[in-house]
Amino acid sequence: MNDGTAEPEKKVDREERILDAVLVLLSEHGIAGISMRAVARQAGVSLGLVNYYYDDKVTLIGAALRRIERQDMTMVDPNPAKGPEENLRAALRRVASAEFLTTQYLSLRLQLWALAQAHPDFEDINTAAQKRYRAALASLIRAARPDLSRAEANRRATDIDVVQNGMWLTALLGLNRAAIRRSVARCEEIAFE
Image 1 (spheres, helix red, strand yellow):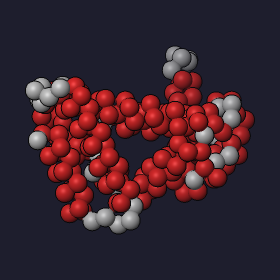
Image 2 (cartoon, one colour):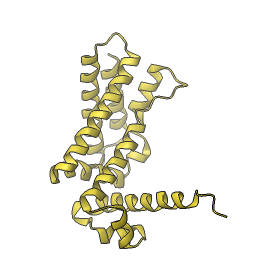
Image 3 (cartoon, helix red, strand yellow):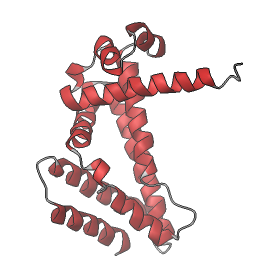
Protein backbone atom coordinates (compact mmCIF):
# COMPACT_ATOMS: atom_id res chain seq x y z
CA MET A 1 0.00 0.00 0.00
CA ASN A 2 1.41 3.41 -0.97
CA ASP A 3 0.63 6.24 1.45
CA GLY A 4 2.00 8.84 -0.97
CA THR A 5 5.13 9.67 1.02
CA ALA A 6 7.66 7.33 -0.57
CA GLU A 7 7.84 9.08 -3.94
CA PRO A 8 8.39 12.64 -2.58
CA GLU A 9 11.08 11.31 -0.24
CA LYS A 10 12.78 9.60 -3.21
CA LYS A 11 12.60 12.83 -5.22
CA VAL A 12 14.17 14.85 -2.41
CA ASP A 13 16.86 12.21 -1.90
CA ARG A 14 17.73 12.18 -5.61
CA GLU A 15 17.78 15.96 -5.85
CA GLU A 16 19.94 16.17 -2.74
CA ARG A 17 22.37 13.62 -4.21
CA ILE A 18 22.54 15.67 -7.39
CA LEU A 19 23.23 18.89 -5.49
CA ASP A 20 25.76 17.12 -3.26
CA ALA A 21 27.52 15.98 -6.43
CA VAL A 22 27.61 19.53 -7.79
CA LEU A 23 29.19 20.78 -4.57
CA VAL A 24 31.79 18.00 -4.51
CA LEU A 25 32.72 18.62 -8.14
CA LEU A 26 32.90 22.38 -7.58
CA SER A 27 35.19 21.98 -4.58
CA GLU A 28 37.46 19.53 -6.41
CA HIS A 29 37.47 20.89 -9.98
CA GLY A 30 35.79 24.30 -10.04
CA ILE A 31 33.20 25.27 -12.62
CA ALA A 32 35.19 23.51 -15.35
CA GLY A 33 34.46 20.20 -13.62
CA ILE A 34 30.71 20.68 -13.80
CA SER A 35 28.77 19.10 -16.62
CA MET A 36 25.42 17.39 -16.51
CA ARG A 37 27.16 14.09 -17.27
CA ALA A 38 29.83 14.54 -14.57
CA VAL A 39 27.16 15.42 -12.00
CA ALA A 40 25.11 12.35 -12.93
CA ARG A 41 28.17 10.14 -12.59
CA GLN A 42 29.15 11.67 -9.23
CA ALA A 43 25.57 11.43 -7.90
CA GLY A 44 25.11 7.88 -9.14
CA VAL A 45 21.98 8.79 -11.09
CA SER A 46 21.11 8.79 -14.76
CA LEU A 47 21.89 11.75 -16.98
CA GLY A 48 18.20 11.84 -17.85
CA LEU A 49 17.33 12.38 -14.18
CA VAL A 50 19.71 15.33 -13.89
CA ASN A 51 18.19 16.78 -17.07
CA TYR A 52 14.70 16.15 -15.68
CA TYR A 53 15.36 18.28 -12.60
CA TYR A 54 17.60 20.93 -14.17
CA ASP A 55 17.39 22.52 -17.61
CA ASP A 56 21.09 23.23 -17.94
CA LYS A 57 24.37 23.74 -16.13
CA VAL A 58 23.40 27.27 -15.05
CA THR A 59 20.16 26.19 -13.34
CA LEU A 60 21.97 23.24 -11.77
CA ILE A 61 24.73 25.40 -10.30
CA GLY A 62 22.16 28.02 -9.30
CA ALA A 63 20.26 25.40 -7.29
CA ALA A 64 23.50 24.37 -5.56
CA LEU A 65 24.26 28.01 -4.71
CA ARG A 66 20.80 28.44 -3.19
CA ARG A 67 21.37 25.32 -1.13
CA ILE A 68 24.60 26.77 0.27
CA GLU A 69 22.73 29.97 1.06
CA ARG A 70 20.16 28.02 3.10
CA GLN A 71 23.03 26.40 4.98
CA ASP A 72 24.67 29.79 5.57
CA MET A 73 21.42 31.23 6.89
CA THR A 74 21.23 28.51 9.53
CA MET A 75 24.41 30.00 11.01
CA VAL A 76 22.48 33.14 11.93
CA ASP A 77 19.19 31.51 12.93
CA PRO A 78 18.42 32.54 16.50
CA ASN A 79 17.50 29.91 19.04
CA PRO A 80 14.25 31.01 20.72
CA ALA A 81 15.38 29.38 23.98
CA LYS A 82 18.42 31.68 24.19
CA GLY A 83 18.77 35.38 24.84
CA PRO A 84 19.86 37.93 22.21
CA GLU A 85 23.51 38.16 23.33
CA GLU A 86 23.85 34.39 23.52
CA ASN A 87 22.32 34.01 20.02
CA LEU A 88 24.71 36.58 18.59
CA ARG A 89 27.77 34.94 20.17
CA ALA A 90 26.64 31.52 18.94
CA ALA A 91 26.22 32.85 15.38
CA LEU A 92 29.65 34.47 15.44
CA ARG A 93 31.26 31.25 16.65
CA ARG A 94 29.45 28.95 14.19
CA VAL A 95 31.59 30.09 11.26
CA ALA A 96 34.60 28.59 13.02
CA SER A 97 32.90 25.21 13.52
CA ALA A 98 34.90 22.22 12.39
CA GLU A 99 32.39 21.48 9.58
CA PHE A 100 33.29 24.81 7.92
CA LEU A 101 37.05 24.51 8.33
CA THR A 102 37.59 21.43 6.19
CA THR A 103 39.64 21.71 3.02
CA GLN A 104 36.68 20.50 0.97
CA TYR A 105 34.30 23.13 2.37
CA LEU A 106 36.83 25.95 2.16
CA SER A 107 37.70 24.99 -1.43
CA LEU A 108 34.00 25.00 -2.23
CA ARG A 109 33.62 28.45 -0.64
CA LEU A 110 36.47 29.76 -2.79
CA GLN A 111 34.83 28.33 -5.91
CA LEU A 112 31.49 29.90 -4.96
CA TRP A 113 33.10 33.33 -4.74
CA ALA A 114 34.74 32.76 -8.13
CA LEU A 115 31.40 31.73 -9.64
CA ALA A 116 30.08 35.23 -9.02
CA GLN A 117 32.49 36.37 -11.73
CA ALA A 118 31.65 33.52 -14.11
CA HIS A 119 27.99 34.26 -14.86
CA PRO A 120 25.56 37.11 -14.08
CA ASP A 121 22.99 34.66 -12.62
CA PHE A 122 25.58 33.38 -10.14
CA GLU A 123 26.57 36.93 -9.25
CA ASP A 124 22.92 37.80 -8.57
CA ILE A 125 22.43 34.72 -6.40
CA ASN A 126 25.65 35.41 -4.49
CA THR A 127 24.87 39.11 -3.98
CA ALA A 128 21.32 38.40 -2.78
CA ALA A 129 22.54 35.66 -0.44
CA GLN A 130 25.20 37.91 1.02
CA LYS A 131 22.64 40.66 1.61
CA ARG A 132 20.29 38.24 3.39
CA TYR A 133 23.12 36.89 5.55
CA ARG A 134 24.26 40.38 6.52
CA ALA A 135 20.67 41.48 7.23
CA ALA A 136 20.13 38.47 9.51
CA LEU A 137 23.44 39.16 11.25
CA ALA A 138 22.49 42.84 11.66
CA SER A 139 19.18 41.75 13.22
CA LEU A 140 21.06 39.63 15.75
CA ILE A 141 23.32 42.59 16.52
CA ARG A 142 20.34 44.93 16.99
CA ALA A 143 18.62 42.41 19.25
CA ALA A 144 21.74 42.15 21.43
CA ARG A 145 22.50 45.88 21.20
CA PRO A 146 19.14 47.68 20.91
CA ASP A 147 20.91 51.01 21.48
CA LEU A 148 22.51 50.80 18.02
CA SER A 149 20.93 52.39 14.97
CA ARG A 150 19.95 50.16 12.07
CA ALA A 151 22.72 51.74 9.99
CA GLU A 152 25.33 51.01 12.66
CA ALA A 153 24.16 47.40 13.05
CA ASN A 154 24.37 47.00 9.25
CA ARG A 155 27.88 48.47 9.20
CA ARG A 156 29.00 46.08 11.93
CA ALA A 157 27.41 43.11 10.15
CA THR A 158 29.32 44.04 6.99
CA ASP A 159 32.61 44.35 8.90
CA ILE A 160 32.02 40.99 10.58
CA ASP A 161 31.20 39.33 7.26
CA VAL A 162 34.48 40.63 5.80
CA VAL A 163 36.45 39.24 8.77
CA GLN A 164 34.63 35.91 8.56
CA ASN A 165 35.24 35.57 4.83
CA GLY A 166 38.89 36.49 5.33
CA MET A 167 39.17 33.87 8.05
CA TRP A 168 37.73 31.21 5.74
CA LEU A 169 39.96 32.25 2.88
CA THR A 170 43.15 32.24 4.92
CA ALA A 171 42.15 29.02 6.71
CA LEU A 172 42.61 27.35 3.31
CA LEU A 173 46.25 28.37 3.56
CA GLY A 174 46.67 26.67 6.91
CA LEU A 175 45.61 29.33 9.41
CA ASN A 176 46.07 27.94 12.90
CA ARG A 177 43.33 27.50 15.51
CA ALA A 178 44.68 30.36 17.67
CA ALA A 179 44.33 32.79 14.77
CA ILE A 180 40.79 31.53 14.12
CA ARG A 181 39.90 32.09 17.79
CA ARG A 182 41.30 35.64 17.55
CA SER A 183 39.21 36.26 14.43
CA VAL A 184 36.06 35.10 16.20
CA ALA A 185 36.97 37.26 19.21
CA ARG A 186 37.46 40.23 16.88
CA CYS A 187 34.00 39.65 15.41
CA GLU A 188 32.57 39.65 18.94
CA GLU A 189 34.37 42.92 19.64
CA ILE A 190 32.92 44.48 16.50
CA ALA A 191 29.43 43.31 17.43
CA PHE A 192 29.49 44.29 21.10
CA GLU A 193 31.81 47.34 21.25
